[in-house]
Length: 354
Image 1 (cartoon, rainbow, N blue to C red):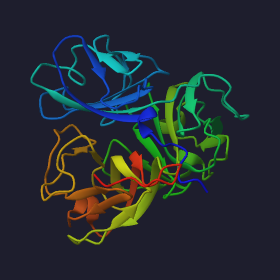
Image 2 (image 1 turned 120 degrees about the vertical axis):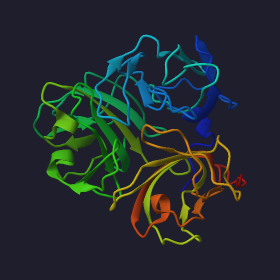
Image 3 (image 1 turned 120 degrees about the horizontal axis):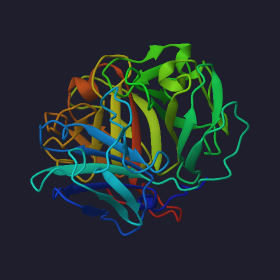
């Protein structure tokens, strides 16, 4: 088996930190590879001002200026002064709290590339209105109109090993963000815009696992609102590039080591069986592999923090060195991780730790 099919993760995923200018700003990625993103997720880092605290998401399928907020129940908004273009090596933003408020505000963004907009496989019961997928990196964006009845949709990823799906009803302010995670299985759903534990309900996935071409949604308004426009972000696991799994917390400062097969660039963690926050870490912000806690975000309307969550990104995974409840209570945690570099590349050459 090959060590990885993706030697350079920067072709498909990049993290960017930047300072706003309160005007038009072209954001260029720092890596050696050009990448035109199809999904941008941005968060203001330091300010606690209204609007800047919110997370913001724009994708190429719904279109630029069409914003969603993963920390709220809010419906899609058209904001002409938000993210206005996806560019060959980044994106452009205007003056907007969630992307570019002023010269004193700093931001972090996480960006994924899809790119193929025709020829998706499968015979679903709902035909997407538009989509973009990348079977190499295992990422797709699927836009569809809900029916209110259990249905199938294509994911375009060419594998049944779907690690995670995130679905939002873009029209209904009363419906949250629903998450499928492979470690929870097809009977459970969990909310992205909240702290609640996972719940067992057929309304999410109709108790049906993805196939190599299709995923199933139930009749719940949050995943399949009748006559509502829906958006789904689907992720398949790719060796050496992405990992979706679980670990058991031990409530100890000598926390678990989690093998991913790569040096992480991004990590999202949530206790699945307890009420607590989703926590977002990345390799661009300071604090990793030191006695100082790294900078991280909750999926909530708060500024980033460094409150006592010691965590190390290693060449082949991550190690938790804190007894904090948010990442290491005696619970089962689910996670989503993307690579900065594979542990071993396709030629058998190992990479080093940070």
